[in-house]
Amino acid sequence: MIMRTTNPLAGLLRKSPFKPIQVHMRSVFSCVMLLPALFDAVYRKDQKDLRDLAEQIDKSETEADKMKSEYRRHMPKTLLLPVDRRDLLNLLNEQDAIADGVEKVSQILVSRDMVIPDAIKEGFDELLEGTMEIITQAKTMIEELDELVHVGFSGKENDRVEDMIKLVRREEHNIDMILKKVNRTLFTIEKELDPVSVIFWYKVIAEVGNISDRAENMADRLLLFLSK
Image (cartoon, rainbow, N blue to C red; front, side, top):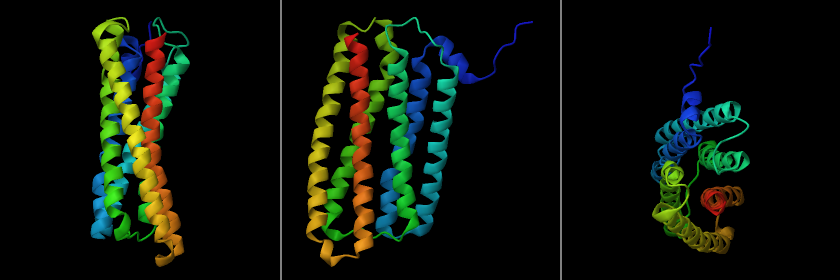
């Protein structure tokens, strides 16, 4: 008697190793999409909303983490595709690290009564907006993976994804510039603020910046697919 697995991930893997990557990225994306509301709650000093959003982020991150573990467990040792298994796993790890970063930010914000300094609010909002844009672009790249396989990693679809990769890299560079500006502004007002709060705001800024770094790493992983 043939035993059939009931795990939905295993079924997706039989169709394409990219399907679970896409499902995982959608879960990660839903986690990142909670960031603007999270910071809005901080700005409004609404602790209840903040805790509720942090709980939603925790659930989304946990779900993404479970997907990653299941994918690694069910992924075959060899793939009949022009893609290295290690490259796929590295791509998955970069995606998962994005959700981890969002959770770290939420944990910092709920662990203290954080009040954003007025001097950095405009720059930080710009940083947050850029982060949302780059993650949206990264998700779009991942959604194109199946089509890339269909056309054999060549042709117009290949060129389109390469253009997306270039865009992500440009956006990440822009975010780096914003990040430096926000950190510099915070540095200039350090003496006016509670020292412990300053430390935690540096941590929050760094974690938000790391999210865009992970998106760029994803673009680099996809570039490996295209170059093989």
